[in-house]
Amino acid sequence: MDDLEALRLKLNEAVQEAQDSDALEAIRVDALGKKGQITTLMRGLSNIAPEDRKASGQAFNALKSEITKAIEIRQTTLADIELDARLAADRIDVTLPSRPECDGCIHPISQTIDEVVAILGEMGLSVEAGPDIEDDWHNFTALNIPSDHPARQEHDTFYLPSGPNGERKVLRTHTSPVQIRTMQNGNPPFRVIAPGRTYRCDYDATHSPMFHQIEGLVVDENTHMGHLKGCLIEFCRAFFRVDDLPVRFRPSYFPFTEPSAEVDIGCTREGGAFKIGHGDDWLEILGCGMVNPNVLKNCGINPDKYQGFAFGMGVERLAMLKYGIPDLRTFYESDLRWLRHFGFSALDVPSMVGGINR
Ligand code: DAH
Image 1 (spheres, rainbow, N blue to C red):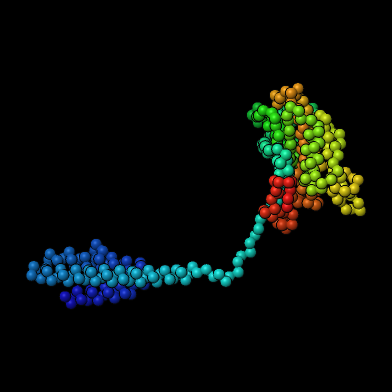
Image 2: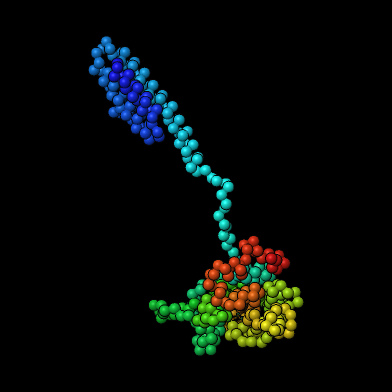
């Protein structure tokens, strides 16, 4: 019985001194586990003389309950201590200054595309897309640019290595092939714009091997040159936000349109100052024309029933003119100082109502 008292004191002391739940668990296993000291005592009851067995059993049970209870109490205390420690360690110091927030901004190319899409979208044109890697037929032939046509040389095309059938794909040199894909895959009428990347082997202050264009195509039974002019005059005025912007259609040549025109807007270039919308000078901003009947035929559309107009413009050029960006190469240098200067806040989205509203 003295031994039992010694064990009782020893276990109680160990429980009180356990510093964390792991230590307490080790004590529980040592006392009450399968091979624990109290468990072993209870198993040995059958070896005790019958007359002492009852008293010993009661004593063992009392010890077991006492230690179980002590462990439970200590467990609760330790859990509180551990929680307090965790709360203290994880405490958020609300007086610390916040980390500087790094606002992203919209690249002028994305902004310009959004603005053009918003203006033309309001006129009923919807966005189409096509692949950057094109075949010769969509990029040239279907657009009435046959293999011996000089326009092919002017495009400074990037050719991909030839495929198994000897065909050489190209990085599209303009967004015009999206016209072809749209007409092949649907039925007229068509009213689409296709913004996207285009590629030509050229690099200087106004050219980059990868650049962006926006193509437009409107085809219906009675579409005529008046629609082309109305649409593009309205577009130029909304985009440059000059209500009475002078717009001029100058005869030109593109294989895929007949007649073709280049669109100029009024500007001044006096004493090195350049200003859009005033003065008697002109600046070319896009190409356009009535879709050549051969192009309609190539897409399986009857040119006697349908006619339309198309236009194409360079996004970088529009952005440079509108936002005064002097060098086209800077668009792709990812210089954060440049982006912060010329970029747009994400909240500056163009409104779809009444043109652009920033
Ligand atoms: N594809 C022409 C280019 O890259 C731009 C263009 C001009 C597109 C006239 C057109 C158009 O749709 O009608 O220079």
